[in-house]
View 1 (cartoon, rainbow, N blue to C red):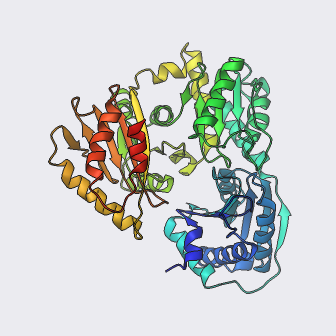
View 2: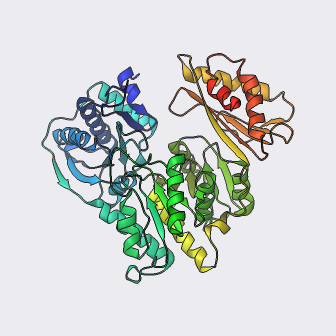
View 3: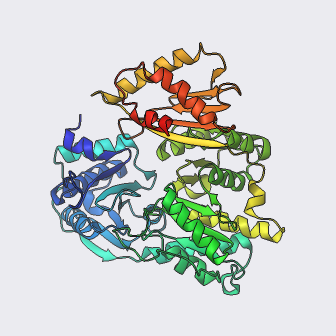
Length: 508
């Protein structure tokens, strides 16, 4: 069992904590000593996994644009050197590129200093082996070793600079050239205008080192310079302000396409030529169309909050199979891997958050790889006189959608939340016009007929927080309110939850 300090630092499959002062009531817990202990523990864990002595290991190290990156990098390097590690210092880098160093450069492991889209004062560590990112149970083992202060015998390691991002960018350029069928010197993107929004994270390279050398017009691109205070908007394709900003940028310059990344570029989103978002269900639809082109009848694994229209699009328009699973990008990736191991052709695992992992790319969630595939598809459609809007035309989208996050106020939040879900399951079975989804793999998903809301709701346990997220969609105006009212009527009789967010929603 992890003590509270170490348990607090575990966020799913990543280490995350407070790295800087400046936010009230948030005390630094990602101290130098904590970072050194976690890094030393990762060395011990990795040494056992690859069956090599620590001083025979090579580990790459990168970071995103956060203001605490330099301090944390110094602490990580100190711990790695003390264990005799050869360190490849990659500097400002995307998270996916750090995994690829285990393939291209034969690194035994990789570490990325990042907290994804979290606020500027936070940071963390993400670990990779040649098999991909650590699972939750792997990270728990590492933190248990850190808690026990396990270290490798002291040796003298060393660090060497490694500008791997140049190689990574070259891989992406080659993908575009091969996909379009035009060599790099001939500028395959010379007739495309693409706006990039990096949100002042690590993704600015995509405009300057991938698109521009291939001839793309990148004018109108914004926030390409790294700035760990994120002064313009949160670098997060799920954030409304961020998406509104990139949509406006595309419309302002009449671009053909816009792309946006989160801080460490493991997630991406897009904007079409009309300035409309290609995000969430629309992003899943485009990625599915691309993935299923060479895998007719293949299976696409998504998280649990995808819409009814998306399921119809994947199955009726694309001829694939939609496998709705759990929230959490590692959950959908691991489920896709499991299905493939069982002989089921599954080329794509994708969350509505923008985490997209393709089998052809090691099932690595890589925002730059995803938008590169979208650019290739957009170029192919253009040659046919079509556009991404045409590709998405058959996708039925809901009239209304909402997410309400309901706090769990009991001490054992997961147990208390599961009790509420179990009670709702029993209740739903007895209600007229309600039906429990047959592919329910997380929480409880309920469909409502036309007289009871004409849509669906999903109540589940949050992956990380003591929260019950309630997602609702309806194909009728006012339908979400109807579903919310019916759900509230049940939940107000339950114990251990704070219904004020749902009540506030209904008051509005």
